[in-house]
Amino acid sequence: MPVETLNIGIAGAGGFARFAATAFLEVPGIKIVAVADIDASAAKQMSTALNADAYVAYDLFLKNAAVEMVYIATPPYLHYTQSKLALLAGKHLICEKPAALKVAEAEELAALANDLQLLYAVNLMQRYNPIYSIVKSMIDQKLLGNFLHGFFENYASDEFLPEDHWFWDESKSGGIFIEHGVHFFDMFSGWLGEGKVLNALQLQRPSVKRKLIDRVQATVLYKEGVVNFYHGFDQTKLLDRQEMRLQFERGDVTLYGWIPVSMKLNGLLSEEQLEIISILLKDSLMELHNERQASSQKVRGRFSEILFKDLVTIRYGNLSDKEKRYQEMLIAMITDQWTWIRDRSHVRVIDERNAIQSLSM
Image (tube, rainbow, N blue to C red):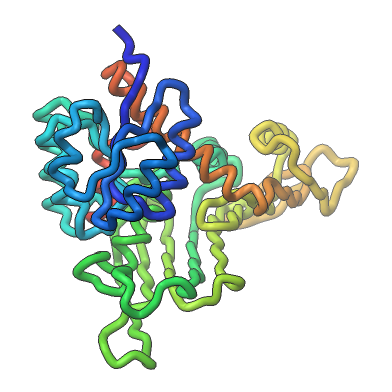
C-alpha cells in the first residue's frame, strides 16, 4: 500500500532548517512532528511554529515513534554520529552536506542504510535544478560539440561568519571543499562523469594569527577536459557572487549564482541545434549576430569544419528567482526520496553514491 503521510523529525533549528521545513510542508502528506536542537530556545521556537514536539536531547528525539524520517541540518562534524544513530533507530534519513568528514564514515552509513533497508541520502540538491538538466541535455546531445574546459568561481561572503564560527574550524566543518565544495564536485560529475583531482591548494588569511583557510582551489580532470574550482570566503554580502562556465568546441555556457538561476549561451548553431536549444530554453532572449540568407556558413576549428547558421547569444532565467528556485529544488528532492520509500523500484536523482563520491573528491 502506498504511504500517504511522511512524518519528519528535524535535527537542527537554524535558519536553513527552517527554510527547508517550509519547503517540505509544500508537499501534500508531509508533516514535521519533532525538532531537536541543543539550544532549547531555538528548538522551542521552531517547534512551536510547526506545531511539533521540541527536544534538546537527540536520543529522546529519536525515541519519538511518530518520526519516520530524520532530516539533519546540524554542523558537519555531527553528521556521521547523528546519522548513524538515526539509522540504528530505524529512521529513514536525509542529511545536509557533507555526509561526514571522512569517506570511510560515509561508506559505513551507506552500507548500514542498505542493510537496514532504509533511505539514506545527502542533500546534494543541485541535480534537481532545471538549469542543471538543461545543461546536461546540451552536453549529452553535443549541441555545442565536445566539452573542452570549465570553471566554477565562488566569491562568497564571510560577513556573517565571525572568526569563532564553526565554519573556520576544519575539525568541525572539514574545510571549504568538504563543507561547501561537494555541491559542485557532484554537479560537474553529473555533467561530465567521474573526475580525477590533479592538484589543489589552500590559502591562509594573513591577518589572522591562527590558521584560518579562506580560499581554496582545485583542478579536476574529466574524460574530455579539465575544470578549475575556486572558493573564496572573503567578500561582503553585497559582493557575494558565483559564476561557472563550460567551454565547448562550438561555444560556451555560463551559469550565474551558486544555485544557478540564470545562464548565457554563446554558440555557432545550425538551424536544428537552434531549434532544440530554443525548446530547452523556453522564454529566453535570443540575439543573432550575423544572420545571413545562406542556409549555412563554414569555419574551421580544431582542424575540422564547423557548419552553422549563425552566431547566437541566448540569455535565460533571472537572478531574482533564487529563493523560489531554492524552494523548488528542496521540494523536488524530498518528493524524489519519498517516492523511493513508497516504491523501491524508483530510481532516485541522488542517492548514497553521490554522498560518497563528492566527499571522496
